[in-house]
Image (tube, rainbow, N blue to C red; front, top):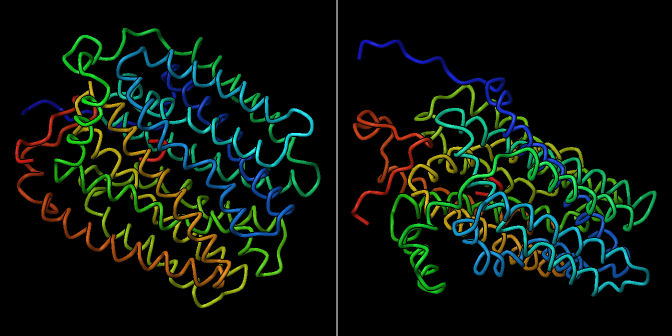
Length: 433
């Protein structure tokens, strides 16, 4: 106990790790390219059909396939070398996106190919999330996760804005060419910029001997059979409510007499502030304080969207969306608390389940919001979604305080770090984390 305390990790320390730099840059390329293509395709469908429902379905094509990828492909990264999984997924997605560029591709074909492309995102993200704790340890992992999440959100902002501009001045096809190129560059960075490691822990464990369905059931029991893990994953899944503005961004902008650039601004505002605030939240607050603030921030994140039901103008709407986005920084606390409770041999599968729930939920809520916007105003739909999310956040906050009291003796005794994942107590990560 008489040793000097180790200095706090800094972002410079994290970026000094060459493997992390390459992983980070590959994530930035993939996310920006994906969002550019998805936004461009969504606007293209809305321009051709003028239907909020069809537009929401097109946008959901970038989310719903996570149910298939999460169920059948998510645990591959626990059974195969994680670097190889990421490179393979990037190459497959390159081919699928390239097929979307073929001349005279019908709308249904474009959406189907986007669906297939997205299906390979779960194993990639599970492998990426699982390999990060091998590259970064302790508080370096926390800051690294904050950087990855910020990159994910910043990539969405850049891609959304670029998608709106691309459709306004060019066409959907150039966006798809850029998306395909980002996958190629990402694969090269991962293959030559990260170390070759032995297969995941599950390869030599009893987990590897389980049949696929038994393995899947065991993963769900791990995540949902533990009160703490279940509550944390539910905090992560609240994102399906406060991102409803994404699914009906085009109809919302049109209702305020805006075009494709206004749509891009709405999409960007939904994530911009989170990209700015998340690194500050991670750097300024200590681990316990981050977890203590998780519930109140989740409530504010959803509750602020209720104000949209008052039908504000475009500028005020963007401010409200940005405020909600800023409160979304609570996700970094949920992510790091989740990862320390999951054993390494189940890490990729657990992250796959978490990401699968987010993407399925977003896909379904986007379609439901699009259908509702056919009958009610987009502003009313967003306000109701924010209210539902706020009520759920209040419930999960009360549940989490029962599991992990703020500043309680449990916290004072021991704080596990991501460097040494611990199994949950015997009583019983989230997007791109």
